[in-house]
Amino acid sequence: MQQTKGKNNAQSLFGLTQIPCTNHIKSLMDEVHPSYVTPVFKYLFDGLEKSGHLDGFRSYDNNLLVAFDGTQYFASNTIHCDNCSRKHHKNGTVTYSHSVVTPVIVAPENNKVIALQPEFITPQDGHDKQDCENAAAKRWIDQYAAEYQPFGITVLGDDLYCKQPICKKLLDQELDFILVCKPDSHKTLYQWLDELDAMQTIETVVEKRWTGKTHEIDTYRFANKLPLRDSENAIDVNWCELTTTLPDGKIVYKNAFATNFEVSKSNVKQIVKDGRARWKVENENNNVLKNRGYNIEHNFGHGNKHLSSLLLTFNLLDNMVER
Image (cartoon, one colour):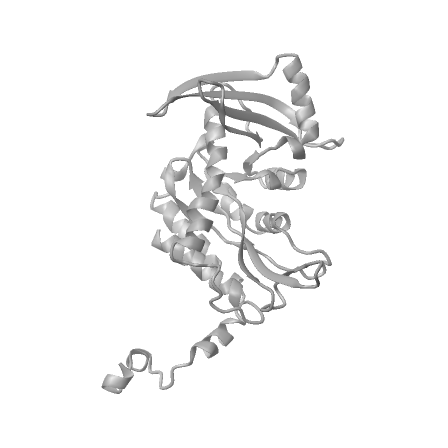
């Protein structure tokens, strides 16, 4: 437009006589911490809540399901900044990366997700150890749980989150949880289950379904008040499991969850259904951002301070608004 008409929109609309180049814009953005942008997430959430759009996301106990997951959005052996995580390899090379925890509101039968404020996995002042997904999740809970607790929240996550420090932090903030609970990382809990199983006191619900192609058998098992770990101060959790088999006995799905909800025959199916919805944070959010036009793993600009995380925050907001 400048070349054809001798004038451009930046000049006519905003009075700019000189348009900064891309590198200059990125240099200015590099100084902006993502925390200046994150209040927009709560603003959009409040708008959705007031308009009734969140009603379709409510599930067991009329709660909103917030699924946590970490994802890496940048990695390089050469490009880096002070906020990069670093992995030193035996051959002397270093991988620099950026990762983030991306909480999103999900629902079992809804293919849309609603992004909440991200928490970046980045070196923390006063800490010698590398930052990690677990620590970032704790920071998110400390900073944002009180904002969302009045709306009724159930936190979903994989086995990484099913640890006493996070579970206790959630309970202290009056948040509910349904978290994947694997045998290898919860030996004490599963020892209790083995004893209950031997006494035949684990309750069971069996349902048969027709998928349109074949019959499947869903076997739900559950038990309440089990220690999450081997310690005197271990918190009690409630456990449920779903095993789906074909008529010939072949297992096509098996997973188990720990929750603070008391599990019964009347609610075990819904609790498991909610727990399984955690995968939507990967499929409907992180994979969309990586593979369906947003290309968050592309290096749009790295900078020396905050540019990489700021651009990722803009991508999350754009995905939220567009959907």
